[in-house]
Image (cartoon, rainbow, N blue to C red; front, side, top):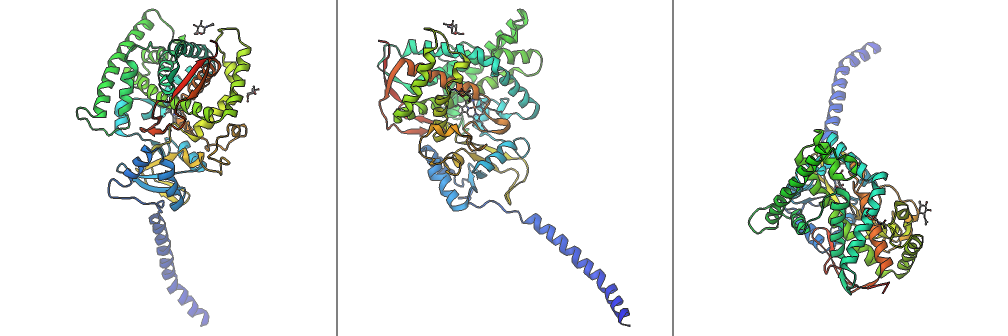
Amino acid sequence: MFVDTSYVLLWTLFPLIAVVYFSFLRHKKCCNRDKKVLPPGDMGLPFIGETMEFFNAQRRNQLFEEFVEPRIQKHGKIFKTRIMGSPTVVVNGAEANKFILSNEFKLVKSSWPSSSVQLMGSDCIMEKDSDKHRYLRGVIGTTLGYAGLEVLVPKICSSVRFYLATNWKGQEKVSLYHSTKVLTFSIVFECLLGINVEPGMLDTFERVLEGVFSPAVEFPGSKFWRAKKARVEIEKMLIKVVRKKRKEMEEKLLSKENGMLLSRLVHGMIQGEISEKEVIDNVVLLVFAAHDTTSIAIAMTFKMLAQNPDCYKKLLQEHVDILNNKKCGENLTIEDTKNMNYTWQVARESMRLFPPIFGSFRKAITDIEYEGLTIPRGWKVLWTTYGTHYNEQYFKDPMSFKPSRFEETIQPYAYVPFGGGPRLCAGYQLAKLNILIFVHYVVTQYDWFLLHPEEPITMDPLPFPSLGMPIRISSKYT
Ligand code: HEM
Ligand SMILES: *[C@@H]1O[C@H](CO)[C@@H](O)[C@H](O)[C@H]1NC(C)=O
Ligand SMILES: *[C@@H]1O[C@H](CO)[C@@H](O)[C@H](O)[C@H]1NC(C)=O
């Protein structure tokens, strides 16, 4: 009887329990799906969001102090905001850098403003993924591989020496920043690509670069409009150069092994691997990627040397030692540059404090789950150098200049002036040689000092010294 009742009870209750149980499960599942937690943060005004705060801080070169840092304090290392109409998640810290940068193509893809894409060209490497990206990285990578660098070093030496002999010799005052720009430009064109620099080319390219981060509005007189016109001029010039090179290679079977990047790209064109537009867009991109970045890195290295006489003494000794092992007028070799350890520490420490690129934007190509937070598909993600470079968790006493900190190993993705993951700077080796070799010839040939030690650094949107970093120079050999 007892048993019977309980059986009846069980049989009547079972379906009920089952229904409750399953509906509970479904409910739970559905709630989990809904329970996506967006990162904390303030989206600001409708549409424009916090765009003004972002740009104002950037213009004052206070992006970290005025925009990023206060929001980290308030919301934590991962926060949301709205910049230029896009909901954006800003991520900070080595773990987050690693997560975002190494998941390029899988969870995110690089995302440039429309004006940048139009001016650099829609077929440039920044806009490519999968096979084409790999192909272009391969071509650049071979040119900047060990064999390539061995050929490149004497060429860079010769460019730097020629520049100093024609522009600095006999002068008392020069603009260091202007010099680094002219030199970086000719090193990319002549040493890397193998294209002769014609008068006026630098000006035309700079007009393009001025529009890369300005709004994509095309009314006569606007920055973007001028940049577009300059881009058309550059295209005309480059088409001529590329077609001439193609003809030479086809007729004389000039081999791609002359080492120059343009020859390799044109070789790819002849083989049907890439189009003429892809060659041209990537030449423009390389100039864009190399130009302001390398120039400001060199300028800030000199500024730091001026402010830290002990570091300068040590650096100078390194170069005197190298010079003493050379015959008069002999070029440096790649082995010599490998002995510039301290110089490279100084340059890296300068780029830690003054990263030429503060970070860059990605776009989520799927819903991203990270540390219990969701970054919805279609949102932008901004990774930053500041989030780690200025954090004492990764760099002790972060605001002071200490090149020797690079003697110790640094946690991966904490030091990221060159980015990381599949889009790690493809020109890293060239930038390094450009910096080391320029420093070598300047410090061994000249005494110098800054004319405006307190010169402000402005951003537009990359940092640059507002007065062009004028220096007083005197030759050591007169
Ligand atoms: C101090 C100098 C330089 C700095 C600080 C720098 C920094 C960077 C950074 C941060 C990125 C990654 C951007 C991103 O993840 O969205 C990058 C990419 C790139 N850089 Fe550099 N760069 C420098 C010099 C150069 C030079 C000299 C070249 C070429 C000759 C170059 C060519 C490139 C290219 C082609 C990419 C795109 C790579 C890709 O999309 O796969 N860079 N650079
Ligand atoms: C230095 O290198 C350049 C470029 O490769 C070359 O033309 C020049 O003759 C070299 N100078 C010396 C002294 O070897
Ligand atoms: C510079 O560093 C390299 C590799 O870390 C090392 O082999 C070399 O001996 C160092 N050179 C000097 C002069 O310290």
